[in-house]
Amino acid sequence: MEECKIKNLYNLEETIATKIFEGATYPWEVLPKIGDFIIELGNTLSKEEYDKVGEDVWIAKSATVAPTAYIKGPAIIGKNAEIRHCAFIRGKAIVGEGAVVGNSTELKNVILFNKVQVPHYNYVGDSILGYKSHMGAGSITSNVKSDKKLVVVKNDTEKIETGLKKFGAMLGDEVEVGCGSVLNPGTVIGKNSNIYPLSSVRKVVPANSIYKNQNEIVEKF
Image (tube, rainbow, N blue to C red; front, side):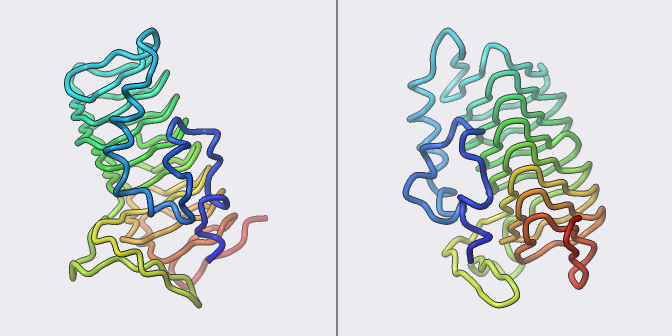
């Protein structure tokens, strides 16, 4: 399933977490490693550029964090990132350089590449969001199946057993998710694709596509 491979989804130069992907083929393989990786990486960060705040929370000195935001470790907030009013970071989160975590947005076990925007009422759990990807207001990742079975990644012809109970969405670089959309467990969206507002997305969306509904995914021109 070539479209789901790390090399086809992400520019690894656009994240502080590059090394976590070493030896992995698909991005969801690193989800169980995020917490330990943050602690290991955090302890190597420059004290001139990052402050360690509380237990296993590193915040870049150039980042802006609202006093009402809650950040639980392990977490790294990158340079020039913005954490807005009442953001709720539950731990195991890497927020990339220049990224925006908005009002009442909740993060848990995630990697946000540089310049990702989750700016309004978003839930992002057990997910990886590529460079400059953007989730519209109220759009969320659903990270557990209703039947609690392990998540399977599917396209029209293939499927991959992930072995994971919790798996939200993998968004490639520069993906745009419309307002009010739900990305169901195991969703993978290829680079430069757009998701219509109010969509319920599942399976794999190819790169350079416009997702209108499950039965209408068209190529961008």
